[in-house]
Image 1 (tube, rainbow, N blue to C red):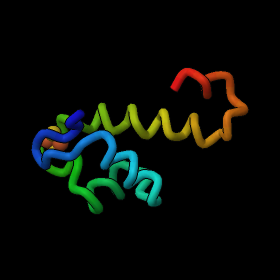
Image 2 (cartoon, rainbow, N blue to C red):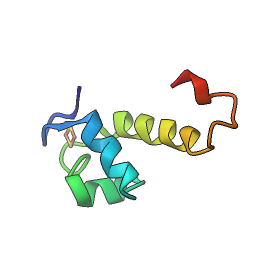
Image 3 (cartoon, rainbow, N blue to C red):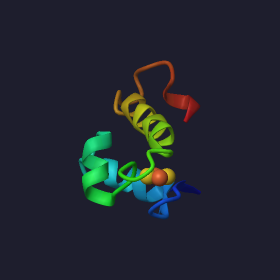
Image 4 (spheres, protein in one colour):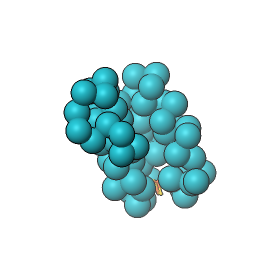
Length: 67
Ligand code: FES
């Protein structure tokens, strides 16, 4: 699934970049350019970041199994 149409970046590429430590819109923009042109993908990227933060709880939070 393409997340950023301007730079043809997929959700899996965004998730990998987040796993590699690029855990903010600014860091992702610098690393894989997402969000740095029209900004139309920022909401989708924020959604992925939010899900990753929930997963980062280590499965202790009530939302973990909804992923
Ligand atoms: S869709 Fe990502 S910057 Fe335009």
